[in-house]
Length: 272
Length: 330
Image 1 (spheres, chains in turn brown, yellow):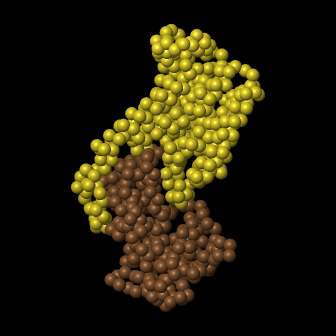
Image 2 (cartoon, helix red, strand yellow):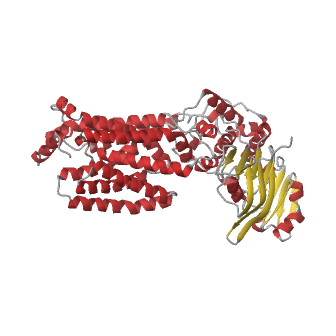
């Protein structure tokens, strides 16, 4: 029996007025596959996630989730948004945020069964957050909050995990911790992962395929197929050099500086 | 509409005191003569106060997490305009107040999705509502106590039909909140993720604004348009100072709100002053105490963190868990 893809895009085109972000995008994301969506700002990475979430209509083409046209949101989706710290004073503890990932859709009072509580305990353990399970979310550091968000996104055992720059504002150590968590969940639950990032290096060892968006063009393939000087030079329409050094990929000469961005800005915020 | 014995008593006392004598002042603020008889007279008010305390206490934490404190104030001013129009045209004041509230709540809910827009819309609506209210009151030829009551509270005058009305609206608000409780908390804290999970975040938000409009309209009947925040915000703000539990927060908030309203009515009873200063003072004092307790928890406690040597749970997490600042804060 053939395995059905989790996510399918056919001849998908998205444009805002005159500006075309991508045209005729064909993509199948299989269960358990880790797809990294790369490219400079303004090329439609976040718009792609919005399209998958049903919040953005395609200009033309089709998009299906688990064989059905996408609707606005789905319980089969786990979502880690661009990091936004929880406001101080929010009356929620870390474990409550994860519980929302299990039953936040259900109407009525927030009464949780013992089974759900035990499940939440195991998720807390899996993301290494047991020690601050009952701490108010807003008192947690950026890295801790992001762990809780990963826990929330996987708590509902989704078939597709959408991550929108989940590593931004984390230091290198937490970047590795959070991306390893996502990878471990993908392997344990065979969840497909669509991971939007501007820096592929923290997840380079986990990525199966890359969707690279740039200059109105796109390329899909393994990192070795896509992240090459001639491919990116063609996409950016200017000479670009891709250098591999000690397991890291550095892109030189790309407009808007993909791969050579300043890491310092990420280290100043969110470091515990 | 507002002609019960206690109101008459209060007006007589107002007239008899011109020169301030400290003893008289004390007795006016805290008087307990004929307390038993008065208690019977205001039984309705106490019941109404307790119910409104429950409503305010339950909705308050959502007002706080959704950052709607200023919106409550804006809604209450339009509610005041509605109530004073009702007074002028001789229709039911509660109905007028609800009409004003709902209108304001929907305008704010629909136009003010983002905080900054919302604040400017409220700032525009509020003086307009207050101005309209003043106009209607100026045109109104009836008893002046009624006018003042809309702004500063008039619960002493609750009669049986009004009590029923308050009761019904309060039950609607409480049931509505219970029904949408979990999705409402989810989408208040984390709207993006809630929407991704398929929750109708916008519809939930509109439903909440309607409930908030109703809650504001009934609260105005107790503490008046100007002091509604003391019922819908202060108790929740106090509760959130001492706990982050999603179960304890509404419970404490309800306890604080009921204490403030019922306590305020009981204290105001003998003195013959309006009840609102008592209600607002009690809820303010509760808030102060909670701030102190919350501060102590923060400096002495561990913020809900477990203070033990953390065990790396899996190989994947071990590196970062060890680096997490868990132990440092002990």
